Length: 312
Length: 212
Image 1 (cartoon, each protein chain N blue to C red):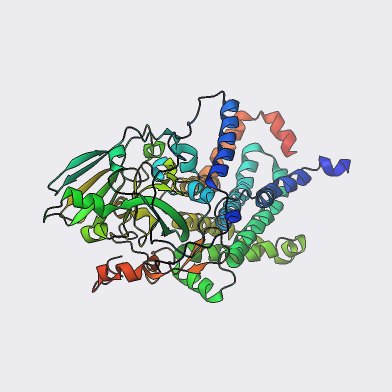
Image 2: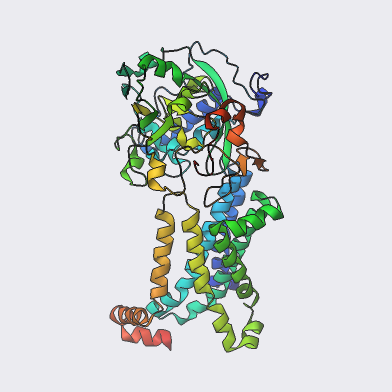
């Protein structure tokens, strides 16, 4: 599945990010004028800046990329509200500079990384991944980032590090959705250490070759393509290496519905809806959901011998 | 024409078509977002619930205001509710599942929120089909009994909404709260409360004129 030629998408089929953004800036400008300027959220300063020195990678799909507009306006990011358009509307209040990411816990070299240092930690590469939301829709997104294992190796986990916990920023002033107790803030996610070390697991800092928009989890987020989207924590401020399996925000909120693993699995339904099929954003007919979101070849061995109905 | 424009039914009819008109305008203009099918499903579902609540508010409003003639608009409101419920159902069958009978049957049996939503829709059918004057006459007292089905239907509609949201229960609870108030307005103490409010705020003379 990997090492395929680049996605065969004709340039005319999607709006290039620059053009889309120009339109958006124009609209935002008009909106700001109408509102008497400076009211409401200022568009994030960093998003849309071309990332320099992004290498190509072997991680391509021969599936059409989801248009930039859909990737950046249809989001689940409850820190900004539970509506799909809330993040795009309200994430302007998130300040991505200065920003630090604390790496701590069972590691020999705990460190608080400045985001700009983190961006230079490893060469940035483009990876096109499928993204399957637990709600039954999916996208194909060209991320920019580097493998999480680059960071983990530098932290030198000790023998006690069995899991990694990822913690999102907790600041209701920047994240207005946190004023509602819809989830227990901060947002917490977790991976087993071998999952976190897996070469597919990405720390993403951009998409479509540009700096990550705030609504997509700027300045740095996780992308774990074989798991449901909510496992890929956004706007990360802390990674903690721990011995016991972390309790993620969704496990704490609805333990019967969300398990720790949350691997994409068409045979294990969500208790309230089927996971057998998905709607790819932009397509009319549903497609079959693939085991491990189509990454079984790479990751199935991580779960050998496990009952995936039990460890959902 | 002038007479038609003076008839409130004309305006209510137009008002009831606005949600559909909005979907059409948004659809033509590409304004349904990244997931248009979800948008249409949500929108038609929401307006079905709104329709149910508006229809159920006729009786309490009548008691509160003394405008007995409000009941003349109830049938149209009920039929529009059925209209949006049908659009909701067709969206699911056609756009969402694309006529996959196996998948639909599985859904109805296995997904509790679909089970209750489907039940509510099926129960609406006899109400819509007995809405004519002739049917009212033919069924007599049994008509009223049959049309009490609207209460369980509304409750099922709220449960359908509660069970389908992922986590944020704000909206379904808001609709549910309104339904509770509307149903309470039918209980003896609710009726008494509505009438006491009317006695207090509407002068007796005015009331006689309206009732007369």
